[in-house]
Amino acid sequence: MNLPLFRPEDDPGPSFLGLLGHLGLGPTEFFRGAAGVDPGLSPHATTVVAVRHSEGVIMAGDRRATSGNFISHRSIEKVFPADRHSGVAISGTAGIAMEMVRLFQLQLEHYEKVEGKALSLDGKANQLSQMVRANLPLAMQGLVVVPLFAGYDHRHDTGRLFQYDVTGGRYEERDHAATGSGMLHASTVVKLRYREDMTEDEAVDVVVEALFQAADEDSATGGPDLIRGIYPVVASITAAGFERFDDQRVADRTTALLDTLIGNQIGGHPSS
Amino acid sequence: MYVSPEQIMKDKADFARKGIARGRAAIGCTFADGVLLCAENPSNTLRKVSEIYDRIGFVGVGRYNEFDSLRKGGVRHADLKGYTYSREDVDARSLANLYAETLGGYFTHEPKPLEIEMLVGEMGEEPDGDQLFHLLYDGTVMDMRTFAVIGGEADAIRGRFEETWSRDSALTVAIGAAVTALAGPERRLSADDLEVAVLARPNSRRAFRRIEGDELDGLLA
Image 1 (cartoon, rainbow over the protein chains, first blue to last red):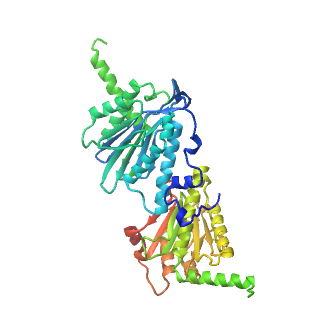
Image 2 (image 1 turned 30 degrees about the horizontal axis):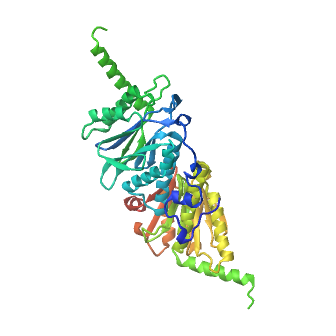
Image 3 (image 1 turned 90 degrees about the vertical axis):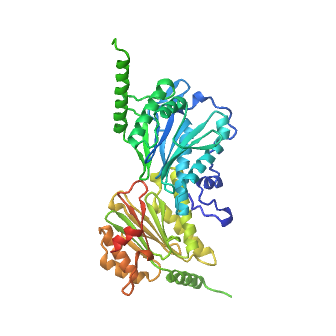
């Protein structure tokens, strides 16, 4: 590999995607002209949620990927750090989405290194918007990717979250957002449980329950797997940065939720 | 008119050396927890010290526009390589070689050589793995295991630095030694005159961290 030096008029600036495009390595070039793709052929990832609380944002995603009727993976991850103070969660075609996340992470880091200064949170959200929009030709062929983006905005001292649509439309949500096949069920739980100024712990309980209920209704969303010890990925974004919770913490909150649900069942059927 | 190749090379080297000698110096050295990069730089926006990759840092002295365009080239090379292969495959050695090729190319083929000197530092997994590459204006690359001084008055600074610095110093000691050596006997440098960063082992994936403001004041006190 050589040293990529450019004349001022050709310089791609701080954009890593611009650099790739310049060198003919752009991410969507491989797929140009591909015919419609049977969704059964490629794994799909589903149901991620984000909830704002008093100190920042909690993001969470289930662990299942499906190819048509098959469960293709039981423990994939759908929640990733985008940089130190933001995170991205994905739903849709897993392969394309993960590559989009990898490029998005690189894009943010590359900008920060070349410019010597990180992008603003709005700048980051806008970058992701452009990447989703660039995927539109593939989305028309069935390879849809719809992410969620959340971060801590140091300029406003608050957590913020953004929802997208397949055309790259970007919608800032005030309190919570969800996407993926289980989004309706997850959103309903979050909507009912949400309160202003929840603590981080309360927000964790809300997302764990939301994903549990989504998995209960949507076959493409995976519930907690107690036998294999697979639990949703839960991450917190606060002024201190992005942190993925360890599985034990999520396992404990899941167990607490299951105890409550079982308790309710017993309470609901006095005859048993 | 005939001018011998020796004379052309000598003139170019003198020209480049003169340009570099006008600028302020920088030191790169290892310390107990990684690599320290310390430059005298009164500007806090036009950087001499920068992050290249997870474990790789950069210092340039001389003409700002010249080393800054090589710095950007280095960031692009490293990010492309990490994207194409894996993050582990990005190393300072191959970057230093590319820089050497570029500097050598300019020195031999262009009418004006680049008036810059650069350091590429890499923090190893273990203290033994730390590496510093010192690059000269003509493409000479030197593999320095312990420390290197670049820029104006480098010899005098090197002498002073060797007296106080030792390989496994704590960060405070290493910064103290670097700052005293850069200042010389007649000056005192404050945090405003310095640009300091470390590649430090306890840090997360991105080991590069700037030390500035109150933290630097504290370490200099």
